[in-house]
Image 1 (cartoon, rainbow, N blue to C red):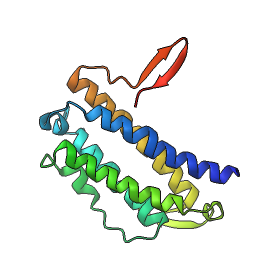
Image 2 (image 1 turned 90 degrees about the vertical axis):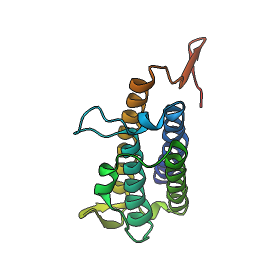
Image 3 (image 1 turned 135 degrees about the vertical axis):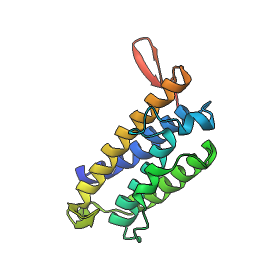
Amino acid sequence: MHTSQAFIGESRRYLRDEYLPKIRRALEGLTVDDLWWRPNKESNSVGNLILHLAGNVRQWVVGGIGGAPDVRRRQEEFDREGGMTRPELMELLEATLAEVDDVLADLSADRLGEERVIQGLNVTVLQALYHVVEHFSMHTGQIIYLAKLRSGRDLGFYRVRDGHVETMW
């Protein structure tokens, strides 16, 4: 497999098979109050972060790479203080990532060098995809931290057996 195709494939895998299941597991057992709790007014809740991830990844991949209209209202992702349940938030994120995966499944390696303007930034398709994966990773970590902070439980992502790490999702 060519390195460029491997990059696209790994990007899809991280978004779909690493980050999404971790977010899903982190949200298990959280109440609606937990989902929308903010440590302070300058921080985001789990709900805000999920809205932000859905908005960002849709803007950058579905719109920026795939060519769909940009319908994002970024500030609303951070201003929201409730009104969505855990299933509704997960449905939004899962549906958005399904759209993203469809775009990436059709992305050919020779398009990685194409230029785009996303959020007013001049980027290549490769840069856009790299940004999305690292951005999603960062906020997944924040969601995990907030979930642990609110629940006080180990999320059980991994188990070590005979010196080997097993993923548990």
